[in-house]
Image 1: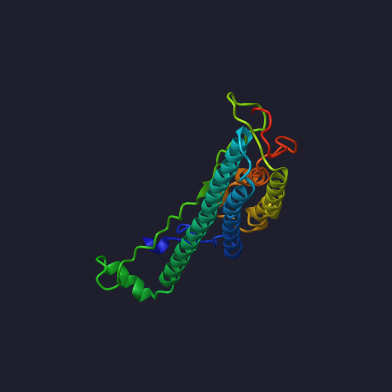
Image 2 (image 1 turned 90 degrees about the vertical axis):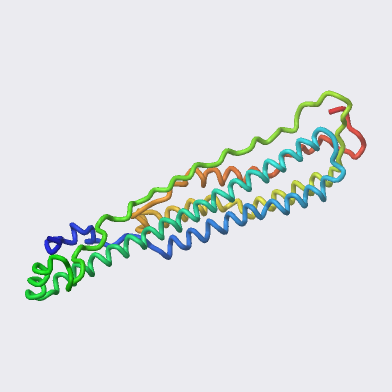
Length: 252
């Protein structure tokens, strides 16, 4: 009979170990990083327009390709960070559901144990549950513990400023424009350069060893490593000496 069920049988002896404040903060920070990464795309395109007007030829094409690669990497990385943030929220929702199940099982057990001897006898006689309702306990199987894993998206390849293209194409540019682009691109990268280390620190703070969330976990350490690589290599590589003038340079 269900009267014999213990809290162990109902899997309701312990509360879910989950720090909702910490995980909510982690999800918010992941969203903020995703916004910061995707927010690099528009300004980068503006710099391309501003400083690339006089950049022409083969090297200019490599430069434009690298900018688009950086933008695509930023889109992919921002998307993955958003997915991890949602994964944290999904795990939190499951933790709340499991705690609600535990609380319901405990309440059911408390009410069953508090019945008088006459009520218990009545339950035995009322086999069809016409007067006392269904004596079946609430769901006893725990919500399945999830481990969400996120693979790092593949990064695009940056093209080196080397080699030539067959034909009569020439490369020309204004050196000040190239320096201006590179300076502003590095400054923009510096704004988020410390974010990968912060992400790893947040993961440690909210992890089981810190008592944050041992009921379920996200695995995204590869993403934090990739974030570091993506954020520090988004500036297209520009040579300091080729091309050096607005006039057509040697065939490239």
